[in-house]
Length: 209
Image (tube, rainbow, N blue to C red; front, side, top):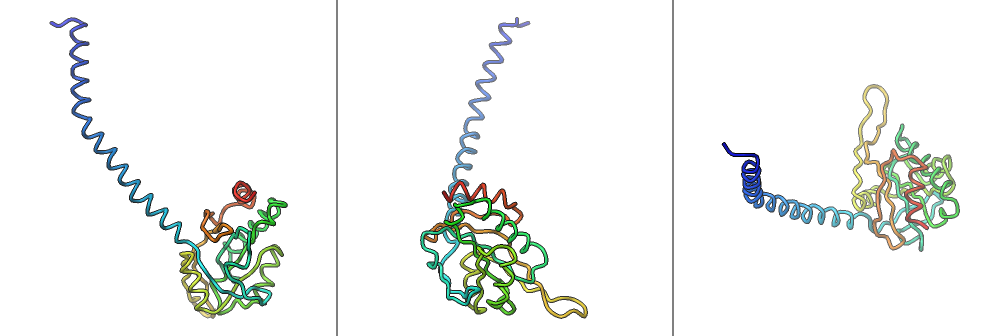
């Protein structure tokens, strides 16, 4: 019967053998992880790089606005519509809180509310709506073609849902994200619409200084 030392020696030998056998599999897994990171990480970077672009819309004061209308400023962009029952007013209220919390740094940021409902959201209606939240938020609308174009630029989904029953009209199911764009028009980051105003201010304040 082998003694304790022999058992330890045998255990070491089995351990080295197991490590030797497992090494190729470990290397294969590491290589796979590296390839997946390169593949999907690169795709994510390319996807982020394609968010944003040129647009030509009508501001709530009647002026023509493009992506170059705010030189030197970051842009915080949210897509929604004035008849939105819940997420839009909540998001706009949080943006207003963030602008207040940012203090002087808010001067380097232009908040934009772009409608996904150009059929109903006229400049006058947009102005009345956004002013309920903050005079610093600018509402933008435009033709159906212009809005569709900017939705494509920002990868926004907006689907018209007809109301059921006797009530006429429709609602719009739309993606809800806030896009932070750099002064040069490049994509910086995106926030969920559910983020609180304080959370937005803290995150944006680290970027807009």
